[in-house]
Image 1 (cartoon, one colour):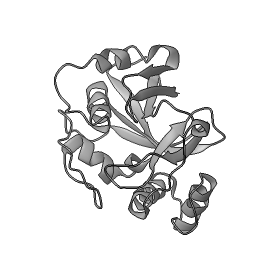
Image 2: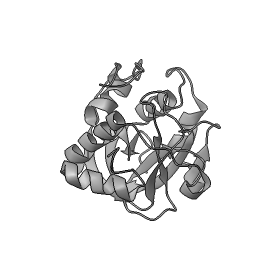
Image 3: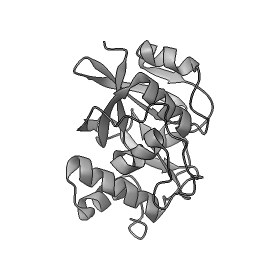
Image 4: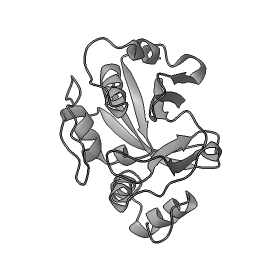
Length: 199
């Protein structure tokens, strides 16, 4: 497989292209509490595609960026989960993941060797943090498809309702990638345990 690029698969707010751009080019997403330095390489994704993953989206913990529950992916849960795959360089993926892990991007990272090896075993725990578990979810056109999530399964955590501004970011991404209407987004969020009053 091509080790110079990966398909980064987002199931959360990074489905919104402008949100992902803050990880690549730097900046603060609308409604967020945090600004990002950006990746070493600011080049936009080579391509993107709407994808459907096995497994499910769930919300837990408390986001320092949005408040409320954070979105996580359980590959063993009942799905499917809509997502958006971006074809980016391996270096860019590592820098996006590093920022999700609340670390500064740049310099040498042991994560890059893992990603270039295709995430042996399909799963790699880089640390104890909430987005520090890499999961290989397949391949597309000979290139590995990777995402990151928490180490726990949906059944093992206490759920927490997400904030509306976070759901808005997800809705925009679902609309961009899949053409979903706001009503369809709300139905999807409800299937993930989001209260009607929040969605």
